[in-house]
Amino acid sequence: MGGRALASRKSRTSSRTRSRRDRQEAAPRVGILMGSKNDWDVMQEAERALDALGIASDARVISAHRTPARLTAFLADAEERGIEVIIAGAGMSAHLAGVTAAHTLLPVLGVPLGGSALNGLDALLSTVQMPGGIPVATFGIGKAGAKNAGLMAAAILARSDAGVRERLAKFREAQSAAVPERPA
Ligand code: RP5
Image (cartoon, rainbow, N blue to C red; front, side):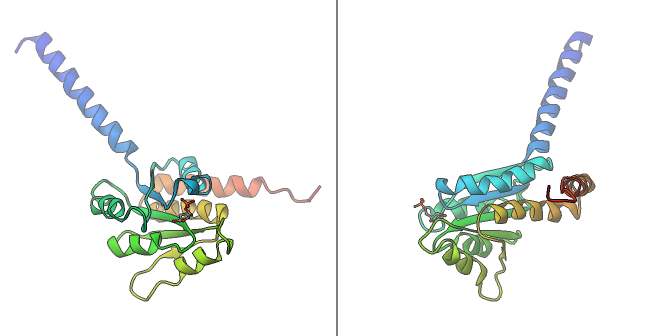
C-alpha cells in the first residue's frame, strides 16, 4: 500500500477510534427515570448534580403504570450500555422505583415527588415501604431528594472512580466555603 493510502487509512481508523472513544466517555453511567414529563422540573436537580460532577446521565420518561413495556425494555440492556446506578422519581402511588428494582441488580435510588393531594406523602410511603428482598434507597420528597439522589449516585461511582471522588470532595469544599459564618 502506498504512503498516501496508508496515511489516509490510518487517519480514517484513528478518527473511527476517536469517535468511538468519545462516545464511550460520554456514555451515561446513571439512568434518571421519571413517571411523567411533568416530573422533569424536579428530577432535573438530579441531572444538574451529576452534570456538575462530570457524570453523564440518561433521563427518560418511563411510567411503571402507563408504559410498563418501556421500563422493561430500558432495563433489559441498561447494564450492558454502561448504566451503573438508576434514579427513579415518581409521584402519587409511586411504583416506579420498586418495579425498577425488581427488574435489575443495579442500585435504585427512589425519589418521591410532591404535587398530589397528599403532597408527596403518598409517594414517599409507596417508595420507602418496600417488602424485604427488593431494596430501594429512598430520598426526601421533591427537589432536595432529587439533588441528593444525584449526589448519592456520584458517591457510589466514586468508590471505583478516583476522578469522581476528587470532584465530589471539591464540591463539598466549595459548598462549605459558600456558607457564611454569620446570617447578615
Ligand atoms: C406519576 O403520577 C408521575 O410520576 C407523576 O408524578 C404523577 C402524575 O402524573 P401526570 O398525571 O402529571 O402525568 O406516575
